Length: 520
Image (cartoon, helix red, strand yellow):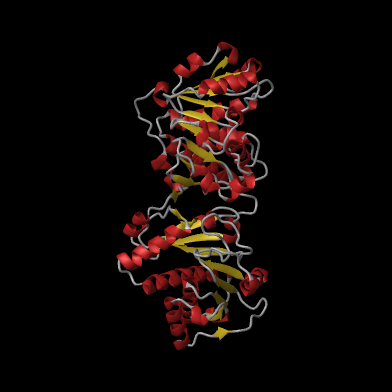
């Protein structure tokens, strides 16, 4: 689904070679890339630190060229608040670089200098030798720019004492706040807040984005996120084997299934949507129409008898049938089956779900009420694996539905969304929907960074179900189709919000935007 209401999330990728940096790292992966680059490849750590500091300095200069374009560099006051880990070393070096460029830059040390890392001691020495001012008293609303370099991705405990006071002080200033790699106080693995955290206007992160700046609430603390290439070798990144990645709008043309010039409706797949109940025709129409808009060749809807007339009016392109007709032959006919939107949870719905669970020879997408029924079919135990869903199944739970399926509390799932999306061995693909939707087949992890809170509208999930189904019908693999569908679903909301507003979007608008979002 889309981003939360407090997030105005932007990722800018900076690469010296124009390479797209699409991995999203946890703390261990970031540390491993560092280690391989330094100790196996032989790049001196001070070189990486200098390049990191230059990337932050460059971004600050860009900010000043717009926000403070009428001020000379010497009148722009910059304060680097630095811890004694390597994150602090980056901040010290950045202040020194900015002073050398004519800015009024100074440093405030947070921590004990005797406990500084070797790299940070080196940066302290260089700054002293170049007469960069070190201050010991903070003045309120004195600085145009504050650099947050207290803690990096290695933080693993709550911030307290003087560090908490510093974070609170930074948050109370009227300054632009630039976080180095990640805002201090944010868990790099899941975006949770370690007691308190710095709320940055911008975050300059290195090499690849971090899970903590992408996932909420960390995303709300990160501001505009800049991913800067500081020279980590591609070999080091691949050897560290990052587990999570994302896509961007620019990736759409290469991700979409090919459409051959010589083709017919059968070339792009037959979809069966099992959805709707008495008085619930909208969900099946939305899912079916989304599947058609995503490019499948033929859509058939199996629904409650009360819905057929309105479906024929609203979606004349679809074939309609009823549950009374049975679904066995329709399942045999279809290339892909989706079940759940507006289905209800009565006895008929339960029998339909039980029938669909027997499918082994084609992709199946289970959404909404189908998942609620599934959670009751195997009431004993916890976790997704107990349902024995094979590799041909895609399930699309939101947080509350995942709570019913897994037996875990919604808050626990929300705080560890990657673990709950990927921590299964059945082979099915899980699309765990939240402000940052996570897709995983148990090995690969896709984290979606598109979308916004315009998607928080009734029927949005039905549309996503349809898009996934429509892409699967065109021959895509389950993980790829689910990830691409989530990407596209989010982009429609981004495009809509650019041209209209986030308050007024309806689920049907998502479908209409598909014709403008999908590549020619």
